[in-house]
Length: 311
Image (cartoon, rainbow, N blue to C red; front, side):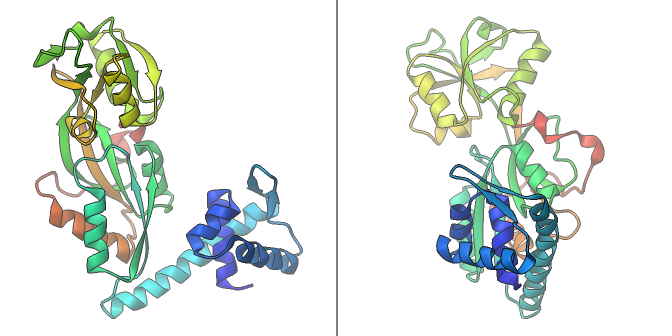
């Protein structure tokens, strides 16, 4: 058994796919499969159950992966510590990002990070704030860019506020509200809405605003993509609430109007509070260099509530 085999096992378990694991490890699928098969023969145990549709760990695989993760992480940290002592930043930054980040240009900050630290790599993971905060807490992500409603802060992680935006109403250009510069939530009662799926963090801030105002709303269309939601708006099928920066970043011809007393979205950068890796610290330095203002860094606050109240 060697470290590379352990790394392959961890990646297959994380991705539930031999194909994706091979891509992440920059090897062919046949080479990765061969090494895992050799490890299984050495152990005398099957680690994965393979089918044409999925890959899952066996009971022995679950037990093995738990220790393999520790071994791989320890080896990575040892290599990074040695490089850091020599003034270099190496390793792979695991960066979680919500699809609607507007506080920074994600490609721009990654490019600056890579120019400053050419030996480092970036593994980009898209998701909602709930999943990304949980990933940071579990040690699966190094840094996450989040969007939460105003009353909520990321819990169990260190974080810093990057920006805040009041949500606006996006309506079709032919809508009766298209010439309005501001609207109240009460005026939107009875309109057909498009929004993120129910129960997701992207939906929470709008749901909370309407609920607290006692205004019912009809969410007839649900989608994971802000661009698709705005496409539904442009087609005259619905209206929506989004951050103005999200609307500006698309090619939609939806018309935006301010919401009087509407919800506020706050973007945060979050990271491991206890032992941030060198790549995380270096990336946070880049984030700090391209942003200004915001609140001071905060550590874990168990009373701040779950990220599921955010976006």
